[in-house]
Amino acid sequence: MQRDRTTTFPRAAFASIALLAVLAGCQTGATPGNSAGASRSGVAHLSEIRSAAGLSSLKPDSTLERAAMRQSAYMASSGKMAHDTGWRRDFATRMAQDGVAAPAAENLAHGRMDTARVFQMWMDSAGHRRNMLDPRFERFGLAYAGTQDGRRYWTLVLGK
Image 1 (cartoon, rainbow, N blue to C red):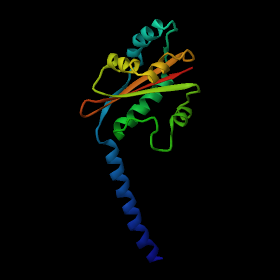
Image 2: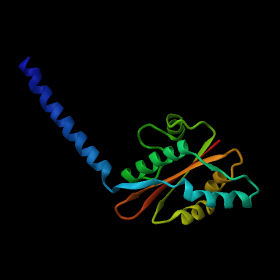
Image 3: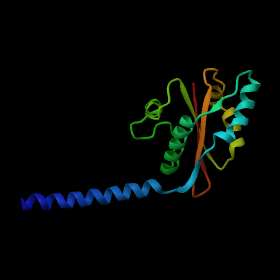
Image 4: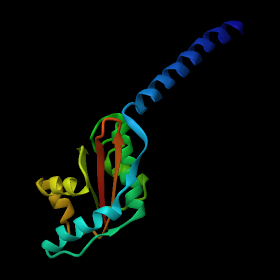
């Protein structure tokens, strides 16, 4: 019995130290409290974009905004801009777990930019533009998370 306790303690201690190291690494670059839902600031931009294409405006949605905030926070803490969070959670899985029904789409961006600039960048990209002009979508959520060096990781989630 003593042997089992001896071999278990070092493994448990190692596992605890490894977990602390991973958690500390996840926080590098993220600035606590520097993330926000930004859907209200996106209303005018999306209304103008969709109106110019003869489409109805999108309404801000708190469920979509929460999904956008979670993705932005993940990207800021990991330093990666990706639809796959690396936790075996691709876009479709994340949306289902966040309560977002299909169809849905997501635009991502990062850099030192404000709301107007991020929407201009998305309009200059065919795929991102297509998402914003998809007539199936009626709602959206916009969020960003900032880093210590002033970058923002932006997420726009669009849904029915």
